[in-house]
Length: 122
Image (cartoon, rainbow, N blue to C red; front, side, top):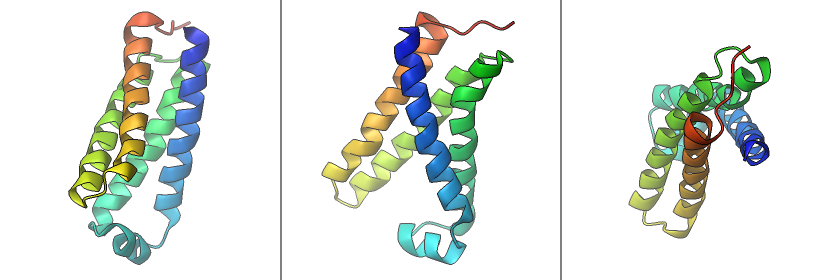
């Protein structure tokens, strides 16, 4: 179980660090035009994704406050719920499956690192 969680955490971390970093450095006008959401809110989401992606890996690797990993995963679940709902509001059912699947994987990581295979501090 530990290996499966590490693999999923690594892939999700790459996804969120890339997505958050891309949104963070994208010009705000382009970001607003693309998403239709306010610029400061999208900056907040990008920072949350970036920090959440780092939080999926770094506490476990460094063995410093590893209890932050399930919290990072749970926080990103909330972001993915929002992404799923906003995609469904547009009337797009098939594209909403991607954030839903990512959210389910994050929920698995949160539960797995909280109950099934918690990381130990030094």
